[in-house]
Length: 204
Image 1 (cartoon, rainbow, N blue to C red):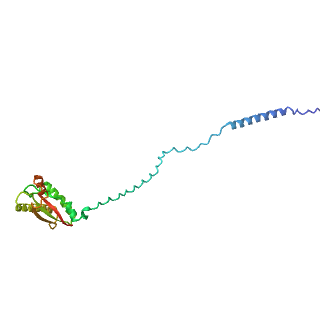
Image 2: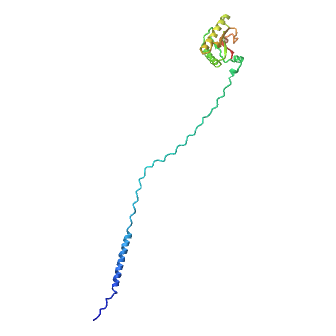
Image 3: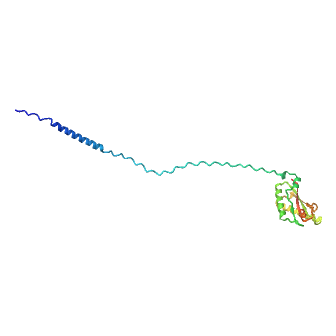
């Protein structure tokens, strides 16, 4: 009886090798395919829409500088030469003006009233003064007539001052008629100066 020899083993090895190669190729291809797929990026949260930002607030304005009031020194009070003057000086340069009259008249015209108004202001300022109002006339006419006319002129001036608020007890009157002319001339200019109510300050 013949014994069969075993089938040759060598031809099986190439088949296994081919199978392994095929498997490796397939595995590598699968790995390459798997690696080739990109991982999708993670979804990031959408930022909120920008809100309208309010304009930056301005810094507070600096306080206004305090203006210090300018101190104006008081004006120096002028020395009152009238109150310090003697009676002789006052009557020599009298602040009281004479009131002049028309010929043969004791009526107070506008210039005479203006002079007496100024005199009333002076007498109100120097309220301790007492005065004498002298009535004078020009040289025309008799002495008796001019004495009476001078008296009427002095009284008219006194009455007007009293109407402006000067007390009667501060005002006395006297008439000199034509006895003491202020201008010794004998013309109309001299006569006009002599027809007057003249003021003499008696006491301060």
